[in-house]
Amino acid sequence: TESIATLDPEIAQRIDAELARQQRGLEMIASENHTAVAVMQAQGSVVTNKYAEGYPGRRYYGGCEEVDVIETLAIERVKALFGAGFANVQPHSGAQANASVMHALIRPGDTIMGLNLAHGGHLTHGMKINFSGRLYNIVPYGVEEDTLVVDMDKVEALAIEHQPKMIVAGWSAYPRQLDFERFRAIADKVGAYLFVDMAHFAGLVAVGLHPSPVPHAHVVSSTTHKTLAGPRGGIILTNDADIAKKINSAVFPGQQGGPLEHVIAGKAVAFKIAATEEFKERQERTLAGAHILAERLNAPDVAAAGISVLTGGTDVHLVLVDLRHSELDGQQGEDLLAKVEITVNRNAVPFDPRPPMVTSGLRIGTPALATRGFSEAAFVEVADIIAETLIAGTQENNEATLAALKDRVHALANAHPLYPNLAPIGA
Ligand code: PLP
Image 1 (cartoon, rainbow, N blue to C red):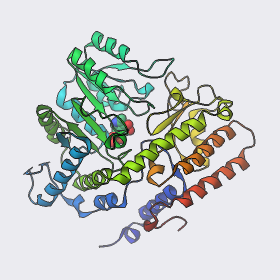
Image 2: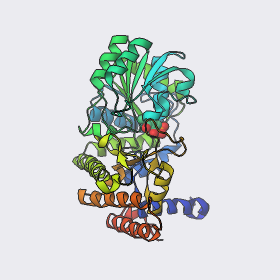
Image 3: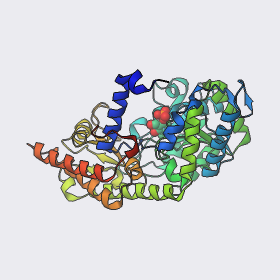
């Protein structure tokens, strides 16, 4: 019965401080978002107490009648959202969803093709010390040195040469769209499964602002907490009944025990929100914001500091800043933006000459600010602040400039209150 504030003030204070940090600054990590209060209420509910190994109607525990309804609603909503015939909403995370897909469809030692981590792929698509790289024979495909985009003819040639059992299409840092239809044609040619990981762009797919992989892929996974704006977690979709069966047994008991039904309740709420006009309009501002950012970072004053935009622009919710020809490195860029309270992450760019802990890139995303209500005009101001901050980073005695930029960030944050009913800021 005791509240966290009195029972554990050390943790309660840090939670309040984290709320204030999110309220005070601008969150621009491309994989993050500000989820709805209703989603957090679901996650913070008594549903966390319930064991429910199995699936709705087929549980290994009693007392599952309410969680059966919750999980069924989550499944039906996400199927409708993405036009999929089957959904598993139990993966605890994106990484566990991907592990389950591989576990379901291929065997250790089989060959997988995935986008090179250094070119924007995810750890679970074949990084050496990730489960994917340890269990499977990884043949990475990459982007071209001149265009920095994936050349599908090269993917096809690589597939013919290596005869993979699975081709993974998806990314964590890539500013363009992948050609799912062509990926499927290549997969069919070599007898591979096409597995699309749409974690980053799922919110755009949900509203039709990005081509859907669902009609093309054998199986699709996603996280639920990035552009989709739900609780942290994963999902798996397919239209193939046989694959669906294998996926279900790969998730439970293959990878996981009891599902996180409180998180699944949060996913259900998020899927309901994702089907609204408001969500569609938010995704439109997400894309518009990314375009505004790319355009500003292409301007001559930024170019003069050796800074450019990878591939010259973006088709999605993020911009990759190319610092290969700047005296600023990724670490310095991240630290500078942190000084003005804009949170981004440094990110290796393809053919990066700097080491992975330093990098020559920044990944900057617009989903969280779009959720916070930023209009195109507000994104123009954000883009200008970012451009001026990075330029200031290449100049001496920039303290006063950075202080003024931080004031502009606080003005934007104040004009777009975040979670006003949850209190902190300045408390
Ligand atoms: N897949 C992609 C493409 C991602 O970018 C990420 C997260 O960064 C994941 C999967 C993994 O998700 P999680 O962090 O929930 O395990």
